[in-house]
Structures are given as C-alpha cells and as structure tokens.
Length: 212
Image (spheres, rainbow, N blue to C red):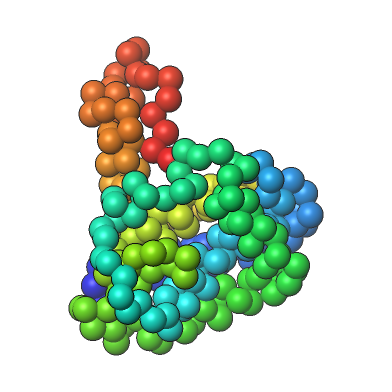
C-alpha cells in the first residue's frame, strides 16, 4: 500500500474519533465556526471526506481528462469564492442534508466507510483512479486521496473549534501532506516571499497568507 493511502486511512481514523466526541453531538444544531454550516452539517461534511472515498472506488471515470493535485485546487469553484455561490451553497446544503441522519447516523456512515476502505484500498493497483462525482476530470487515486487528506485536516480544526474541543493531532506524515498542499497554494496566491516571511519573519509577515 502506498504511503498516501496509509496516510489517508490514518487521517480518516482521526476524523472518526473526532466525529464521535460527545461535544459534537451536544452542539449538533448550533451554528458552527463556518458561516452557513451548523455543527451537524459541518460534521457530516467532514464525514463525507471518508464516505466519498468509498464512492470514488465505485465511480466510472471514462472519458475524463486527468489532472494533478494543484490543478484540482486551481480549478476549485469554492476556493476563494463567495460563500453564496452555487458551488459553496451546494456543499453546505449537502452537509446539512446528511446531518439529518443525526450524530449517530453520521458517525456510523463514516465508520462504516472507513472499514470498507481498510478492506479495499490495500488491494488497489498503482493505476487506480478517483475523483468527485461533480468533477469534470479524474485524478490518480493517490492524488485524489491527497485532496481528501487536506479536507480532513482543515475541517477537523473547524469542527473541533465549533464543538469546543481540542483540535486533534494528526500523524506527522498526514500533516506534512496537508502542509505541502497548503504551502504550494499559498505561495501561488501570495508569492514565495510572503510565505517565507509568514513562517519565519513575523515582523514583516503579510496580514493574509491563506491558501484557500
């Protein structure tokens, strides 16, 4: 099994543990730290990064062009966009719809998907592909999992803050992958100098270095 596949399964396990927290259940109907999301909707969206891994195994990607990780994020309609745009609205609506299953339902779906992934991912060939159902392109399965790792790491922090619990500590290799993507995206948006200063020179760091 490739290192990225191991990282994804590890990250997904960390996410399921967070989703299972009583504080998440207790604040299910409350507003989250992300505008337009309830805690339940955000939790369902985080769980969706695991459920979608199983869906990616089943999808037909015939006829779609292949892109890499950074091209995927360059094309992402939600990145840097108005939260009220069609794509972002659909993301929130999807999370809120899934949240209607309740805390137990969302946790069960994520945990069940993770079990399936543990069973199936180790046997995938190197030529496996993946992608989202609404994406007009395909990726290698490992590149697809890199995008899910970033989503898991970022939204785990969102959910932890929303529920008033500590943000989970991810495996260092998982964090390395997420930070690599965030670093490349931040440098592309703000310039290399801005990124270097944000990480090393607080006295001249830019006010905004957001990658997303």
